[in-house]
Image 1 (tube, rainbow, N blue to C red):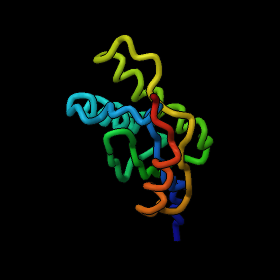
Image 2: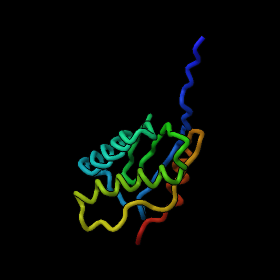
Image 3: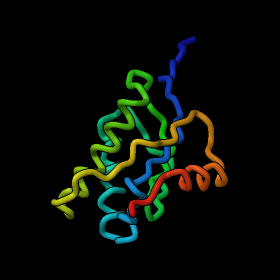
Amino acid sequence: MERIIEPIKLTYYMVFVTRYKRTVFNDKESAELVKSALLNTQEKGFLEIKSLEMGECYVNLICDCDPSKSPNQIVSILKRASYQALLKKIPHLNSIWARDIILRTFPISENELKSFLMTIKRRG
């Protein structure tokens, strides 16, 4: 009997917030640019995006990832890809993402997401 070994994948639940909770994604074109950039990262083969939700100032992702990449590497790749996509539309953009993120191996409740978003300071 032949054994088929499935590759190991880790599921991560991630939330990225824009710096100072800037409402970058209320513009449909910006939201689509970021969404397509994030989905294009799947082509590299080390992650598969299962769910992608965007609010005005955050991105909520569920990904299956190859364990050869650390969670920090995955976050960095996703943030970089989305930032570079937005630079095409907004060339004067210095940075977009806050340092604070949620990164877990279990689901994030709606209350936890709201609480997390409340901890991020707005500019001004």
